[in-house]
Image 1 (cartoon, rainbow, N blue to C red):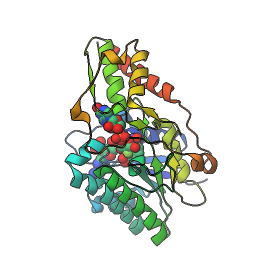
Image 2 (image 1 turned 135 degrees about the vertical axis):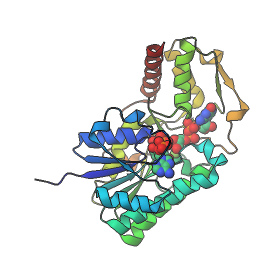
Image 3 (image 1 turned 60 degrees about the vertical axis):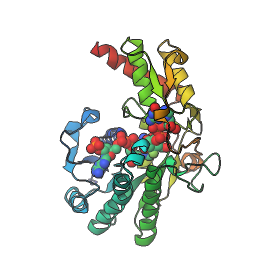
Image 4 (image 1 turned 120 degrees about the vertical axis):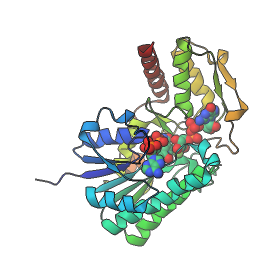
Length: 324
Ligand code: NAP
Ligand code: G4F
């Protein structure tokens, strides 16, 4: 009989954590999700799997808690998805963002190194690291030029992961994931802000949607597809870093156009550009080259851009109509 694989997921209460937990359970893993102490535990996204995962307590700000979690659960794989992940907040809380999103990675790598350096480690790196892009499309060798405190923190997290791999011979990988969305996306991110408000407008609960830069372009994929790539990265012969992207880019405006049309509405009648949502420094264009992941991991995106937008709008319309 083979020993089951044991995965520890930090950030399990977030969008990606919930999809990854479902995927790993389907693949025979024992799964533990690390949650931090808050006044109200946010387990909403874990409804489908809560009875099959172990919830453990820890915080990326506290290395003792991380050592305990790794020692007690004894994972074979650690997925570090926890972060202060909202770019806008990173200008208001730059030091906190650096503590969690940058130094938190070192704390968790150290916990793994001290307890059992054989454990395989995944770091959630981000296309925000490319920022003011140096080439189009962006691949694993494109230089970084982050444009937000969040992006700067992710660059640190990326390189400390590479450094622990090179220094301590750990199986540590960094997945440079481009934007990925789903009906479980937080309401503060632009895609879900749009799909959620489209549903409210459709049912007469709102009239307008206030947004910032409609011309920003992103390479948007479906989160359910992207968590498979995280697992594939930890199950190769050698640890390497990979760009995960669709290879297509679309503007916020295009997202609006398709989302409103899905609900039988015209975005031009509802979207208002509001200065308060513009950023001190913007990432204008992201488009990833997923060739290394396509060829080396056999990974490919399965949900198209239009399918993604429609999936999100349909889900918010269903939720909204259920609440009327
Ligand atoms: P998310 O929904 O914002 O989830 C973030 C998670 O981190 C939550 O579970 C949150 O817990 C947890 N967390 C925050 N601070 C923590 C701390 N100090 N200690 C322990 N846990 C903490 O993010 P996501 O969209 O799922 O993204 C997952 C990861 O991928 C993040 O690292 C993000 O930066 C990165 N990433 C995301 C994308 C994307 O497009 N989604 C693209 C590239 C990279 P609470 O519930 O307690 O707040
Ligand atoms: O949805 P966003 O907030 O995502 P952003 O900044 O690209 O970051 C997300 O993706 C990263 C991967 O590249 C992750 F690492 C990160 O954790 C996060 O998941 O904004 C997307 C674009 C931006 O250009 C922003 O200026 O939409 C533009 N935008 C226009 N109006 C808006 C709004 N963004 C938000 N959040 N709210 C608006 O009203």
